[in-house]
Image 1 (cartoon, helix red, strand yellow):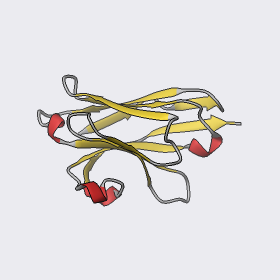
Image 2: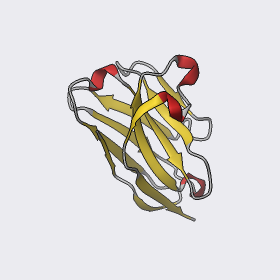
Image 3: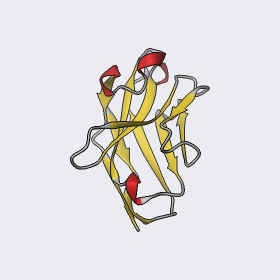
Length: 123
């Protein structure tokens, strides 16, 4: 089970940190990811981090501005978001899975999903 939190309303240029808590004792064996979905749009990949935290991948639209991290001892994954833009407004979802490298950006590659947390960036 995944529980995401940390969303809110922020002005453009601001920062937020999203957190996702996972239950169970196999957290460290899962690749963790963040996706987002704006109204009327498909769910899109944001960032992913492999099991040990050594490999991370980002969507081009958030590269440099966002950082994904994980703490396997606490069963937590984070998304640090800086320089937020109005186009970052969406519901943000954490996900867990064991995707192959070529499929890490595909939502159906992930088995477990959190409930989402809303991020709204005002201009």
